[in-house]
Amino acid sequence: MRSAEERLVRMHERAAAIKKREDKSRLRILGSLSAGLMICLIVVTEQLQSMHHAIYTGQAAGTSLLDESAGGYVLAAVIAFFAGVVITAMVYRYRNKEK
Image 1 (cartoon, helix red, strand yellow):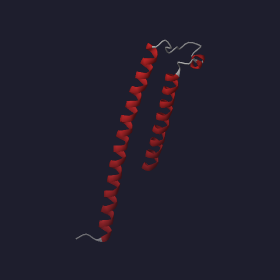
Image 2 (cartoon, helix red, strand yellow):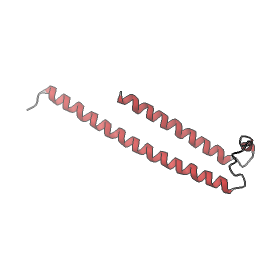
Image 3 (cartoon, one colour):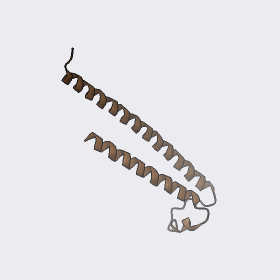
Image 4 (cartoon, one colour):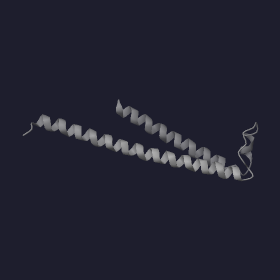
């Protein structure tokens, strides 16, 4: 039979293993969401290029956002910003937990 100290150590090891498994699961989900968002951004970019308001990489790119049909740019920017914030927060939390 094990002593109370051995059982306590075993319990802490098991809790740490469960927590690590949960963190890996969350990172997989986050990776899948990131890939999905990337695909959405690619699709939005392709749709914008097929419209009359195509993506322009010249000097007037900033002023083209003043046009009425620039809603896709705003949507893509909001999605990209939100994804960046979420990914940064999750990576920061994950690294702090490892320390």
